[in-house]
Length: 210
Image (cartoon, rainbow, N blue to C red):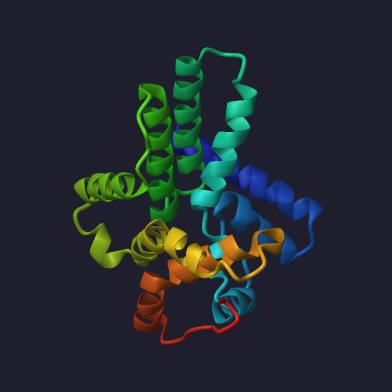
């Protein structure tokens, strides 16, 4: 079934290539399905130099959109049945997009959100991140050490969970036009742990990304 899902992803990527010109089609495939192999190296270099490579990674934002969409689609079902269906679709989507570290992390945390909702418990982001890291390390004890995507994903998420709310209060004097205050707080918080990793692995940092 994994091969069937990956073949289906290939079909969707081919459809994108048929309706969009290059390199827009390859970038769209990366944004939607995590298929980055066809993106020209020059385009990838441009994303990296501007600090926007994370846009091409399937992660928490995609899972949030998926959960919101599926919640609306299954609103007519009993809550328990809807939640189990949504979790099943999350697993399918995770495999479909290649099951990279960032999307696996987001999928587990998204599923924990649904489980908390089902159990009537309050969702704790930091606790969910720790549980997620434990589960992923249990499946592959070496993934925290060799997978840069794992490190960047967890670093960005930890920064947002730990510092975003505090930083937003410090930015209270900045007008919150179009949510810019929250965007700045989230962006700067995510960089607390990711910037050292970017320096370590890529020897560069983009001021534009801030």
